[in-house]
Length: 165
Image (cartoon, rainbow, N blue to C red; front, side, top):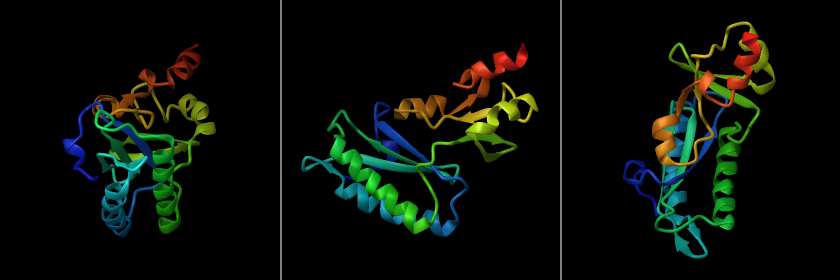
C-alpha cells in the first residue's frame, strides 16, 4: 500500500537506486506515476507492504518499507527489483550500477567511476570535505542524518589517510 514517504517512520527500511545523471522532467513524471501503482500492489506472501518512495536530487530513487508493520521478504524484494528493471528499460538508463560514486559539488551531483577515486583525491578534485552522497543508507533515519557526508567521514576515509602520507 502506497503511503507518503513523509508518513513513514524513521525505522523504515530503504533502498537507494542511483541514476548516472539527473532524471528529465518526463522521466520524473513517469516515476511519479508508476511508483505509486507499483507500491499499491507490493506485497510479501500476499500481505500488502506499507511503502513509499521519494526522488532526491532528481537523480536518486528511494523505495521504503515500514517493516514495523510487515517486513519485506526475499520475494517482495525481487518484486521491487522487477519494478526497478522496468524503469531502467523504459528510461534507458541504469539504476543499479554500483561502480559509480556520487558527490555533491558546486550544488550539482557528480558521478565518478570507483576506479577514478584515488586519482581524483590525489588531484584534489575530491577533498576530505567534499560531500559524498551516501547511497549505502539503510533506514529513513540514516537517510535523514547521513545522506550527505564529508568524504573523510565516509568509507573513503582510508584514501585520505594514504593521500596525507
